[in-house]
Image (cartoon, rainbow, N blue to C red; front, side, top):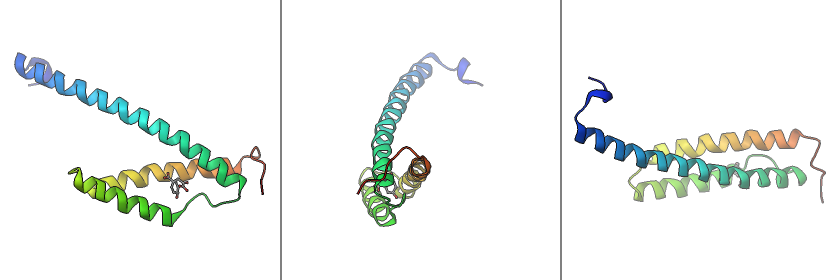
Length: 108
Ligand SMILES: O=C(O)C(=O)C[C@]1(C(=O)O)C=C[C@@H](O)C=C1
């Protein structure tokens, strides 16, 4: 049996749920895009002021906060931590690229 030959009511319920999933995925993409717009600015600020791309103390605070939020939202805290680490690793990669570009003039 495939999803194309299931009962009509099951099909309707699946379609309804998938429409919500598509909306949520779109929201996630838009929120991530906004987050990366902010972190790009942070990357330029750090490059201009010779600050290191990564801030492990800030990350530790973010992880602790996100794990608490995840718990109260009934989301697996380990998953929330993995997701944040995945995003931050990409941000640090962007920060390093920005720092390597000749464009940002150092400011004092
Ligand atoms: O807040 C910063 O300093 C950032 O560069 C942003 C950010 C993040 O994506 O949240 C990324 C790298 C740092 O290690 C910590 C946090």
